Image (cartoon, rainbow, N blue to C red; front, side, top):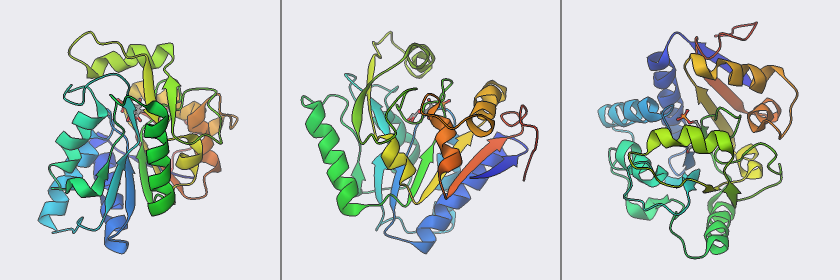
Length: 245
Ligand code: F6R
């Protein structure tokens, strides 16, 4: 794992966007996987702006979503579906035939997971995956204790995820369960980019990189990935003893 720290959120987001563009330049037919949340929003905005400016061709890529809240309509502005369409897919004019997101309203959750697993088997491996990190160390909705061999699955969200997750929703919705790619798929991504910013993520980043590798803190598994980059701003890295740039 390589750690890269940047002066602020803008600089980190810009570097993350550059990495994604670089991947697509090198492999136009790349399979890309994207997280949502407050952390990657600016990365996606910069990605869309720079891609337009530099005429980056995304027409051969395929894009998948990392996770989704279960039981909530995709029209709800708090969903991953809504987020990805708003900040990434529409701005980049990605054709619907190039996108596969989890359906949070699926009547058959098992089949929904199978669909995603089969797609990754057929089109994979995932060339580039962007993930954030939760306050409990989760990656996607791989909550503490998730099996490291897991594929796409339904997750019972833990107390921290349910509490923190309220920030995405305007209404008082029930966010008890999620659907997510599994840790095995995260670890199999050719390039894994984890991004984190802000003071509140400092203890999480410290635990992810300087403590024992364990699925009881899924973000720590990044230490074991052979091609992972952890990008943070200075605030998120502020509890680390050694800063690298
Ligand atoms: C969302 C996701 C989550 C978030 C994490 C951090 O698609 O996969 O694991 O990345 O909860 O969220 P933010 O960026 O809002 O702090």
